[in-house]
Length: 144
Length: 273
Image (cartoon, rainbow over all chains, first blue to last red; front, side, top):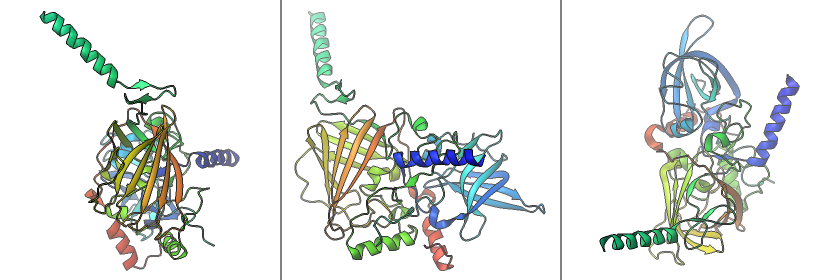
């Protein structure tokens, strides 16, 4: 499995070097901590398709049964609609979803969503990769 | 007599239509009646994948559609792609670029929903770009931040330019390449990457060359003697995205970034490099 995964990622990285697509998103890297990934499951309480970024809210129950409402950030509406999402159809209030995300640096119940597993098992990306917009691996200038 | 007039008119209409119709060139892309390559269409910048939007962006492109959960991490227009040469900033200016990088881009003008400027707008891949070409002018509409450029085919900029985010563009043809000269910028945008600031002396030259039905090659040269040591050249491409339409993008609708950045700074939350 590990070997399969590394082959897969190796292929992905090779393709990345060849294609280098560019996005416009700002802020994710400053506000969210790439070293703090989260996977949370809960019930959708609200979905906001807004610019510049969309949000959805999930009631998540902890081990003791206490419920906390989490807020997740992601792509703007036009990007969601071009990549397989349908407003008010794909993800609705009351749906149980599992979200892979990165926690906000301020420690609040806020996270930057990436992959959402929808009822029925389908997976879609609601937000961009970790660190998007924070400048990347190196500054635009060469540092001597 | 009446039917003869009608028939003559019909012939004239057909001839006019034939004259103005786009004709496919040997490279498989259309040309205007004046023989120039027709760049009209909806395009995705920063991509080399052919096909319709969803197909081209599933797995490989901007984050994928979820069909391939192992889609490679893609880069923001703020992030320097692997292999790109360092930007030729003067030492004092390079230090400012690094400072912005270390602050993880929170000073990004687009976080305030301001227009992204050039060449950034022309090179970002998450949002489509529509080009509408006529013999006398080219109009470019960008979904991101709802900005536009009207590019007359002429040899001289107006003499009453006000400094602006997207500058003043004029176009000319160099063979089959549309060359766009842009000047009249303000100093409030980033060029291509976190902190890549510039002065109002910025001068940009873009070259758009349609090389196939699917692809326009894009080359840009940035000149700004105030901050750069030499012209900074970058290359990208635009891929045709048939079936894609531009949508509304009203950034200030729910922009929470400035408030959050202020909170991070005020509360002393560590986010810098």
